[in-house]
Length: 297
Image (tube, rainbow, N blue to C red; front, top):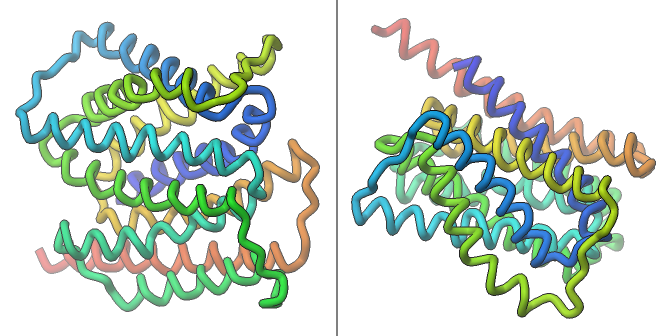
C-alpha cells in the first residue's frame, strides 16, 4: 500500500509541474492545436510500448464504450480545457481548483463504487479547502476574483474526477496499458478536427526548444505518469487516491518559483501547509485502515 501511494505521489508531482510547463507552451502554441499535438506524441509513445510488448487486446462492447467515454471526457476535454484555462488563469490558483477534485470524486465514488466517506477524509478535505481559501483570497473575501480561465479549470477538475472513477472501474478487468493507450487514442481522434476549426489563428512554434518541451512533457507527464497512475490506482480507493491531488498546488508553487520566478507569499505557504496537512490526514487514515484489516486476518 505504501509503495502504491509513493508512485501515485510521483504522478501528482509530474502533474503539478505540468501547470508551469503548460503555461509556457500555451504562449507558443494555440490551445486546441497544443492539445492535439500532445495527444499525438502520447499515442505514439504508448503505441511503441504496445508494439514492443506485442500487447493488443480486443475489448467487450461495454468496456469499449467506457473507453470511448473516458477518451472524450477524461482525456480530450480534460487536456483541452486545461490549456484554454492556463491562457489567462494563474498557475497556482489553477492547481488549487484542481485540488478540490477529491470532494467531487468522493461523492461520485460513494454513488458508483460504493466507497465510504470516512470522518478522516472529510476532516482532511476541510483542512485542504481552508488552505485553498487562504491562497486564493489571500485571507480576505474582498480578494476573490473569478475569471474565465478559472471556469475552464473547473471543467478540468470535473473531467479529472470522472476520469478517476471510470479508470478505477475499468482497472478491475483491463490492464493499465490498454486503458491508457485506447483512451488517449480516442482523445487524439476527437482532437484532430477541432484543432483545425476552433483555434483562430492557429499558432505553432518554430523553436526546437518549445517542441522538445512539448514532446518531453507529453511522454513523461501524460504517458509514463498516467501509466503509473493507472497501474497503482487499482490498489487504493479512488476517493483516497484523488486526495493526493491536493499536493499539486504545492508542486506548482515550487516549480513556478524556480522556472517562472513567481514569488511565493507567506499566505500561500500557510495555505499550502494546510493543503498538505489535509493530504497527510486523509492518507494516514487509509494506512491505518489497511493495517487493521491485515491484523484482523
